[in-house]
Length: 532
Image (tube, rainbow, N blue to C red):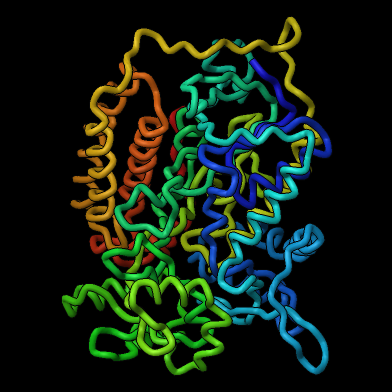
């Protein structure tokens, strides 16, 4: 058993921000199942929404966030994240990150972008690779810290709790079992301060903008440990993912629409004004449903994002990564519209926490996309996620650094080693891959942008059978990363379906044909699930 003052699972903006602060006050382990730079953060193109302009205000940012969240945001959390954002951005800049600027009347000012749902330009960015630059900055700083162990190619298996060990005390998180993917060894790590920053669950769907790591690990582990889970029915589908048979779910940033891009259907019509007065800059839930409706109505395979009316040099300079990627697939976005379709993008629900990241299980915190802090409500406002990661990571560190260490009668706690039992090596990987594919396809077909009770019930029934198969596989074979990810995917898929079935209305990202109206009387509340 190895003991740390802090353990962080995940290496995106939230996890790395927390770890950098924690390293000033104790030993830290950062666990990441691939390389340190492999995170959802690194894929973020748009930027960080933050009030920095005299033309903007905290009140406007709060209002835009609350409106996008469709009545389910926690206003206290929204105000905390919005008002504390500028200070966290300043700290990021002090680490060496340089956001794009422009010269106005002889002065250098931030080159602010605008995205759907925002009433003002407030998105700080580094061209169209903001997340990647943030990841490099934080990771570079972390690797210089002598008090941090960065455990790459290590995957958390399950949380260790007092309840699981039979302690006759308050249940709390005491540590975590971690699989070393290179050796197959399962390590026991002990801490009183464990932070989940594992990102989202986009890979639970057949089509997603997320990287392969986004398998819902944190939510699944927290659920098994007894922590409350909130609002998992609200999965955000990004409206504009590149549609090409050879492209692997490449995101076309909302910033393209913010700079004047227009969504057109297969006939070339600007169709969004028929659905919302804000046109192509409406919030993502509205745009994604509108695209879905246009595709189904026309029988076309996609719609098109048109920015050909803008100066080609501006487009290439503002969106170099998107431009080069589209060009690689035969689309010159300065001359022709980009074919796009919606794809699963962001998990707005997650592990239920307060504004400081504290979960319902003492000793366990959750920050970033894996957490449901109340900021996003029923639909995330574009580019609020990176800001949330920075602010809540700082608040979680501040709270945890003041918390007393847990004590057990008899002194220090010794955790039991992992017991593999009488298991054998996986002999048929095809079973894992088949179940993985089946989960992702049934979620896309039955639990997508538009839902019905019948589709959800079919998904629920099949998922229960799949979970039984996967549970049997888990207990009879030696664990691998693939098997653990499949187990977590099935758990998270079931949580999404159960949450969706319990909400008999349409709100934000949850739209059902059987209950198309908003019902504030019964459902202006969180959907909470817990095993305990």
